Image (cartoon, rainbow, N blue to C red; front, side):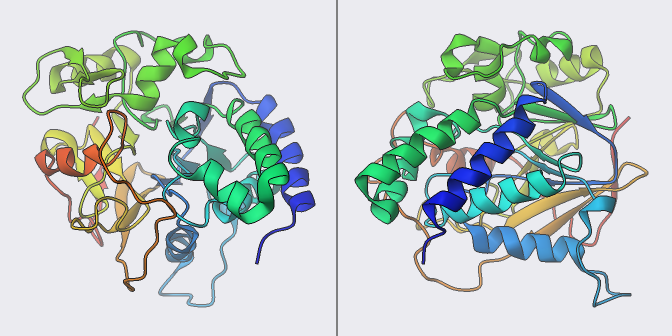
Length: 332
């Protein structure tokens, strides 16, 4: 059963007007919950939303976003087979709670990627050639208005990919033109959506595996955090087995991935979100896949130069955090 075309169009018009008022860099306070890549897996998203709302002392508690802040780190589309439902849910949350829900852009919210990795195909297969193509154009128009970064409490930078040597002050992000239709028009935006950390690297070097942006080492991360006056970076883009992982086994950069089993068929992963408490301690909320049905709308026959599946294997370098039920302080 499909959400009616007219409903999707109406939602997009409403959310676009809200996004137009936001800068490229949005801010919010703590407490907050940070989500990673969803990739069309609406079931995993709703399970984590339920877990966020759960309170053992009050089992009947309902989720009230007036007292919560949600930051989503991009990659809402491609791969999964419920991409429309993911977008409709997130857009409706943004419309209902514009000051509490923040939708950060991922590299899959760009036309050159989502036309090849399943989003366009899902729209056409579900809504037909004419309406499917119209929806595809409308969604990418909305994506062009998404911010590319969010800072929580002046301490935690949430982005999709990573940092950039071009990022010398936070205001640099707001200097990127918005709407941004072509990520290639801004090297800084490209890095924020695509960059990867690399264990053992000093400085930066071109990311020759993805074929775009760069790798950065721990020294570069440390220098950037100091220069920007931040304590931590939280991002998606890479797939930890446990749903959450720390770069160089430190909490200066944490990767969060919300979709379960999102990589190759031989490699399973849990999904996660990261809770930031008011005192700036953090806790991971982790879910596991509980059924074996196929979840991907598109089968990837090979790993091309910009395929996120590369990140599945790269993340083996990053120690996993068994953070569930454990509270960690944000480094100062």
